[in-house]
Image 1 (tube, one colour):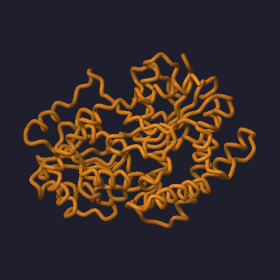
Image 2: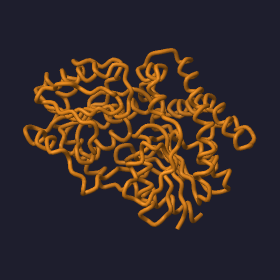
Image 3: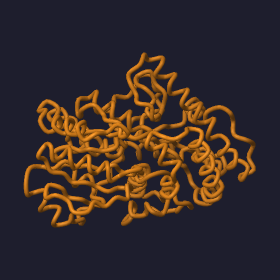
Image 4: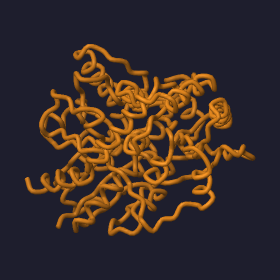
Length: 422
């Protein structure tokens, strides 16, 4: 059996799918190291996966004023870039020695999302293999716009879709290269190339795993063979887990509620957003389960039609919901698709507008509502749509059957084992 290191960085939504991949690989008998922040240790509890905790507190950094302004669509971009560089410089100096130590002896290093750059770097240091995984369709294509930028996407001519993605990667590498240079200096390596790493690794034929559903977003025909769409990497709640009794009673006390949650988004005024949700739900005489996430806001006394939770497993909760309202992260989008329910996407940044566009195009949700322009009236109209549009509900249910028929973790683990044999 092999020694496999899986790197993850970012929010809970960034870390949970790689953690599930670790569990699947460990189940097959491999020695698996999950290299992520300590706050995600609960994701691998009860498995043979070992956690290698990274230093730093990303949640605290994301809560800084400069970061919050960016996430809310305001603030000076140059100020954000300076913040990004300062944080990256600090984290790069802390992470690099830890990464070297944690990946020593690995037969393959699998980089995911924000941590992907370190996969090739560690493979180079230890003279081993690398693979790359993303929760979004990160590879440039003519088929759809770049999935990784926060500019609200729209359909463009094929050549412009692909050009947009290449421009994004060039610009991102221009900003990230000074941070990568710090890691190279620590490792006593030559300065990083000016060429974009992800595009270079694609050219070399390294394996790329896209952890989302091909039933929801078909694989582009212009992707090379070594780019695979595996299906979502879902987390299944253990059979021994029991939900809060009062939540079960709330769900059973009336028609299916709506789920509302923003995942790990840090908001300037979470109370205002929650109040808009409450008003929109009330306008439709509906019920709702509201999740807190990283917003930090704990609602006080709530009306009888609302139930507030800190965190509840999506695979248990969402199939019992009438619809979902969320920020458009890949994880919650996938969980809503799997549950077969319509979804209302309220995107903030990154890939969220892209997923909102795909939800709209597939007819499993209404038009996305950017968070910075969200109003109770807009949300109320969207709720009425997902509750009453029978054709939309039928499409969502059919999509759920297709997504549940996929096994993304098995496919991804098979591909990593195939890479180990080559």
